[in-house]
Amino acid sequence: MAVSDHVDLPTFMEGVKKRNPHQPEFVQAVQEVAEDIFEFIQDNEDYHAQQILRRIAEPDRVVSFRVCWEDDNGNVRVQRGWRVQNNNAIGPYKGGIRFHPSVTESVLKFLAFEQTFKNALTGLPMGGGKGGSNFNPKGKSVREIMRFCQSFMTELYRHIGADIDVPAGDIGVGGREIGFMFGQYKRITNNFTGVLTGKGLEWGGSLIRTEATGYGAVYFLANMLATRGEDLTGKTAVISGSGNVATHAAEKIVQLGGKVLTLSDSGGYIHDPDGIDQEKIDWVKTHKTHRRGRIEEYVAAYPKATFVAGKTPWSVPCDVALPCATQNELLGDDARTLIANGCQAVAEGANMPTDLEGVHVFKAARILYAPGKASNAGGVAVSGLEMSQNSERRSWKEDELQQMLKDIMAGIHKSCLTFGDQGGGYIDYVKGANIAGFKKVADAMLAFGVV
Image (cartoon, rainbow, N blue to C red; front, side):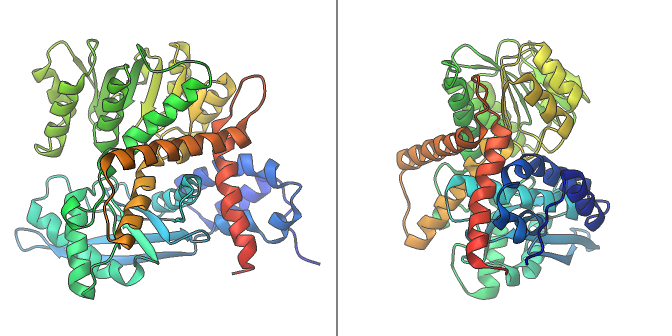
């Protein structure tokens, strides 16, 4: 008789903690999924006997490597790099590369775990992975960043491939860094293949990839509001972050008739009561991308705004909120403040930006709350479409891609409704997303046997 894993949630999580000491972000991600999955799988003996949840919570492999490079003064610098390949049951590993001093193995394992479910929700054949380094690109020259990217790819190239693992960008890794890494991959392997996404349009990239995560989060938000007969017209929005995801989320909110009140970075947030319109969004994009400036300088350009140092924007009253900066930026007290101030809906643009307490607060209040694995899946969805275009040696038009993105986000929303409808007009999007993503991956794993 097969050995079953019929244990309760606390016992399961104790095992996860024991196997992954000093990795709080990864444990948090597993806990958030397991809370919903345990009830779903309790009557499915196949999932238990085949230890499916236990296997998904154990990465296929974690590759760690040293990255040596020289700065502009000729000093040898040493960083650590990783690639976490979590699960490839439904397709090649897919997930971004992050360059930031906060990067640890725990952070990348949580991101790869989340990515597994997120990619499953898109309906595209992509497994889950994530990679990165504790390298900090801030303050580095373009030549230093190039040398680091080349050294990073010299170590990474042997673990990736168009049908094996296809990385993309993430925090600290944009089109410039993807270009440097792709150039080094091509140099080493003599292959021009779709091994990275987020590439330049001239050499295999896809239209709307830059906009996709932010736009997709707002499309998902609009789908949630539609279940209550509402839309974004006239609604106020509080957004954190001021990078790619945040600015494009703001752009789409404005296009759909909403009013954006805040943006932020690690130094604090700006509050513009007049609204951050398209002209101001374009200023922020230029300021952050080309000048590498700080968000506090927005106030000099637009004096009616105020800058609040060292704080997140969740105390500003709003109708909808979009956390688009980083993990665990929205805590339990922040969630209570948003609800007290009348917030109706939250759509996560970042990965796991709400801590577990905050998630429980939102669910208890029964507001519209979308976890990142559902609402920010637009970016990886268009990355998947870029993979398809590379395979076909073609490029789709922008209007085709926009429609595909809308359709994918609507499909994810429908999947969440299927498994998250709690009756009485309440949709638990966290539960819906977790179960829908898990079921697709789990059923594929059952088909393959014990591998």
